Image 1 (cartoon, rainbow, N blue to C red):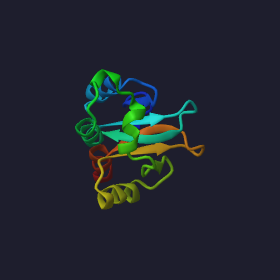
Image 2: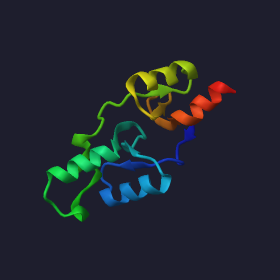
Image 3: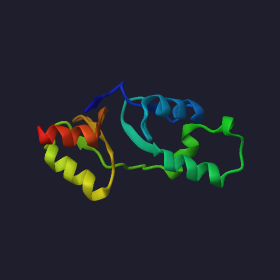
Length: 124
């Protein structure tokens, strides 16, 4: 699991360009959006951004993360740190995703599970 703080996490009030910079610096195709209580409210992928930018004729610098949430995963699939790794990896395969947010018992974002390290761990 990638711990909180080591993957892109932003607020919906952030300027979209800053969120893209976070995504690019982490070399991931997504950014997690949280509220003030660190609760996950959505995920924006690079595909969500592309779809939004193609539909709206507006200067890029005026976009906020909130503007793209309509095209994002508003109720994303998640897992718990207590979930069985094999079960979670199988779930990721079934729904064809590479990254899965990890929530604690209070539904707060605590990490991100990336498929490749998870599979590597299972093969050890």
